[in-house]
Length: 127
Image (cartoon, rainbow, N blue to C red):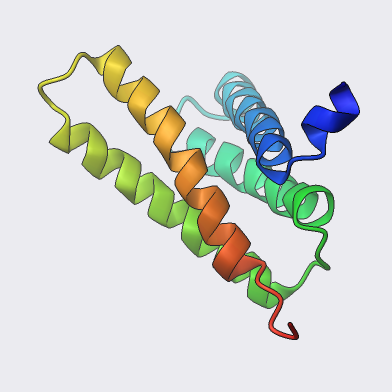
């Protein structure tokens, strides 16, 4: 049953995304506790560590691709774009409760980024 569930790329993508989120939160929290109380620096550090993990594992486990600088840059651009969209959506959806906005963003963005990564970042140009 678990093998069947994880046979779908989008499920693996979501699972790795969840782990990446936990890594980001953990690293940012540790940074705040041990290094600096700066939310900006702690989140940059958490994002970068989570990005490296996410790109590496998504490349191998989800999209079955080799690691490359070109794809790493594309992956980074998509993730930064998703962050900007999340901020804009939060602003556009200002009439909604903050929890509702968070749920909408948390549901939509992974779906959007999955398909962008599938058809742009990790697209096989040889096919």
